Length: 386
Image (tube, one colour):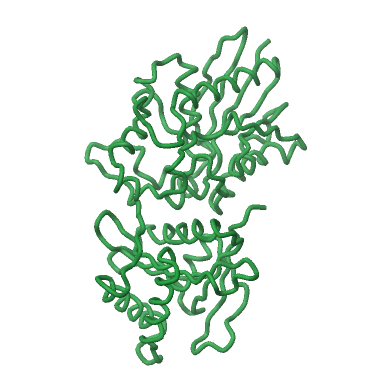
């Protein structure tokens, strides 16, 4: 009997957007990812499906609703379809790993058998479990059409196994799957036929993740995406001028030079913040170059599960290149780790650039700040697991 199996990568998730390493880390689908899910649902509207499986992580099970929800099908979750576990690297930024472990990151990108990180899986182990799951599902649902939702590296490993390629050939022979891209296989009498792979024709360039990224293109000029890393900001030492300049510049840009600026108050609060927890006052770095400042206030509204962003700032030369969202991603990482379910910040209603930025990445107006010296909207973003 002929069995048809569609293998689909999850929609865009936080790791893809924030440029963080998410293997078994349970990240959420982004706002753009939800648009990809809608496009995927439309693509499959007239395709018969009998059964749906996904990895047990949130980003895959969320994406699977594109197939399950319209048909009323149950979703079968299995850890066998998970992404590669990346052990000690989980939820690190690509920027910090590139800074600290560049050779190991190269081995990871090359799908090398020499890749070795504490607590991480090998590519061989991932290939074995994902291919075994694929074969088991094909046998269990012989003669039916199944849809499997998995992850980028796991799918590449599966494709290497389907082809019977030695691992040394995987990186040069296998393509990369866009978020929500579809592959299709037919299985009959234990033989697997490739119908197509990594097809993202349901995505416009506007919502395609790979369309705006460069890391996968393999260009000879070595162009790469800008991946930030974060270090504690030395507010009482070498970074004092950076912080003061950033704070004053942001105030003038938003409120003008006439509004009273409390330099001493901002600076004192930053010193206290760094003393209590260095991870709440950070310098955003691109390689060895400071590019911005992130300041968090974990005490503000903590009783109601809120993580407050006090200051999110990119230096002017680094704006307009999509870097700001990585600062938001760092805040998400910190606050989720300490159990917060909401991000919150204050933003001037007439700061059109910032308002557009925050709304684009899932913040919504939750109210207005009472008693502030200048008008401020309270913006919030959900980051909790539902």
